[in-house]
Image (tube, rainbow, N blue to C red; front, side):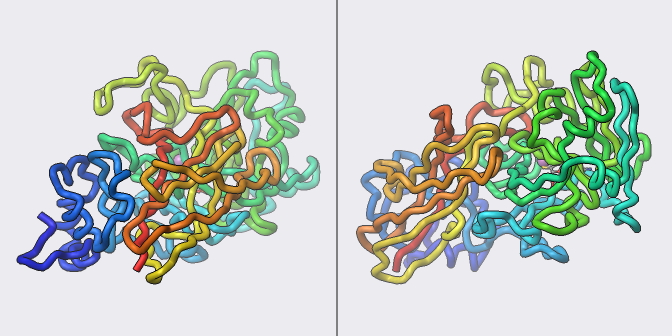
Length: 437
Ligand SMILES: Nc1nc2c(c(=O)[nH]1)N[C@H]1C(S)=C(S)[C@@H](COP(=O)(O)O)O[C@H]1N2
Ligand SMILES: [Mo]
């Protein structure tokens, strides 16, 4: 199936000739390589597999499972490095893992996740108003200028990660953007604490939840529906790392990322971090806006049969994001010079509300793991950087497997677990294929 005539063909050639056919043959088809011998697999990859004796039975090599030379469609957006195009209506772009190589994610590498249309930029950003209302003693309206002058301004490095990050790893496939690991950023956000603003409005004893609204029109253009409107428990709103942010990385927030003002709710699904923020309603019960309830940003309490239909009964809202790591200096599919025996590897790891206790890397299909050096987070909810060097015994095909462990001892699993209809929380061990020689 991966031979053409008598000549053995590399994966690169297979993709170069007919990417669609190559995809049909190997791309995300679990079991597609069933019955294929290691020699044939090696031929498809274009090299010997030195650690083939340690390959778990049935494993589809990363080089075949995760795409190949055809590569994803890229999004060229003003002010951004090339992002992986996940959708153009609404506009969604994922940051390739190798563009997450900065300790602090620069503006041109912050991913894009829209649910609706992109609103008009504010003519006068400082005059943009947000309103706090509902279960408060004094509803207040504040301009961005007033936020800056009335409350303590703080700068924190905070993770902002889409709840669906890692969705593409679910089997069977779930609906939504097929993110790899790149719906994450760790930028330096400047703003005021939501807590200080809520305290100024005065929370009533009945205040138990928030509901968030932004200026972006619904995709359909309907004016009676929000593009997205999520909310959280009041304790998360009152946490000191939850910000109303008006700057990122020392300057204005890029318009596409929510200028002039947005929420940053670190460690919880990114959908809570309302962009183009206009209003926060304080409620005495859970919010019922667009993106709440059912299977939206909700996961099963007890695992359900993968692929089964479910309306979200006995599901809970996602809170902390799970442990995950990215490899940022070696792209999946990298070819290294003949004779390369030492490979420096580095990346980032994070775990929602938790911290990272270890990152391990394997180049022999998980038979042995090497512990990496992990830095301390800059502050709570900042990701952590990791690095180390791995040994490659010979030329050939290898996979760099990387796996983080959180402060509770939870590791990234070997396959995306707790399958759910909208694919949240998929955080399996990641794999990057490399070819030496
Ligand atoms: N107003 C508004 N806020 C929003 C969204 C949106 O579509 N509209 N998307 C949410 C989702 S699902 C995520 S993951 C983050 C993405 O933020 P970014 O586009 O700056 O990366 O914003 C959240 N806030
Ligand atoms: Mo998201």
